[in-house]
Image 1: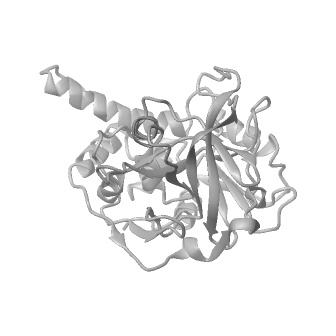
Image 2: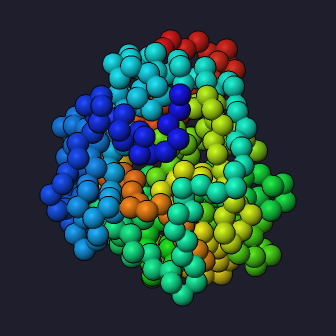
Image 3: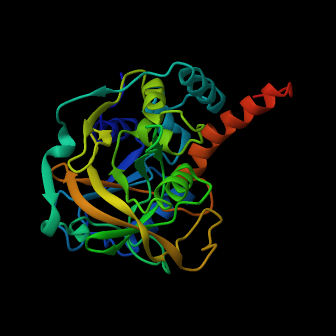
Length: 334
């Protein structure tokens, strides 16, 4: 049985010994990121920070939710001690059987709705993750949902988004990413804003799917259903026709503006360094925020592997590369 939400997954990780709760006050500025980074480096568990400086009790940050193969195994409903090759094999087999999502009328992500003048992105404890980062990042371990206006294809990807102002985010989607290509080829030429939903705290396998490099036209919602072996429940956004996971913790709805730019970054990356200086990024004008009561921000504190990003890449990119090699009759040994 799949986890419907990140809270069920947290309980399972706690039961398997793969999560620790931190009840002492932790600062959103650098401390939460540093503790999470140290846990990766020492082979430690996922970390749930339950007492964030400047924020009410109940507002939490979860670091490293899929930062080990044990946690991936738990997410897939396998024994935590499942050998890594067996996890790869199970993942690959499940991907062969996509399951369409189901649309529901409402869901937990609609427990609180904030629109227009009441929007303030700082109501959430977005962390300053690394010393020297350009700002506080709400979106690191997230799902960013956009749509091709011509074909109707909906893409789920994982892109970082930083708070720019209380009502705007800046992001840095690569021009060769699916979001970047659709935005530059189909929205900018027509001077149209691109509807976007930034989903934080989805169930673990939905987040995993957002990291994968599926081809153009493949609906990640179907692939999430494949990995879960159950359909993802989706609910309509408040301000657009985009559909989002109904059990997510936070959904930030907005428009990526066709003619606006703002500074984005720098941000600590996977080599363990900031690979670039601040750059100009796209601007998302936030139009609505929906969220669960006592919301949880899912966070990745990127650095030298192993962490969520490298574990996900080893699965998703590794399986993709294997398939390409086999298509060219190049043998692969697991």
